[in-house]
Figure: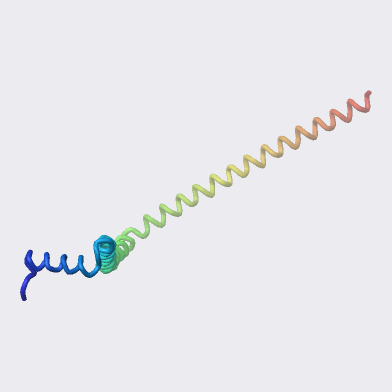
Length: 121
């Protein structure tokens, strides 16, 4: 296998300049650059996908092992937080209903007092 030396590279550049002209040469260079960049990104994403799949399998296996070891405490903790949330919602609802009842009673008292004043007037 032979390598292209500096004279060979100069020859290729002169031929490209002659074939494509000075106006098209920068555009051609940009196009080649974009193509190489896209090719690199594509190969990088393909290799990272393979690595990600392997890492994801390892993470899932590790998570399954941890979950089997800690299943009971995690479930109990989740149930406890869920229970606390439900209890808080029930307390808030009861307090809201109590306040609504008090407001209704006060409005009824005011209505009765207004009717009494109207009868006296």
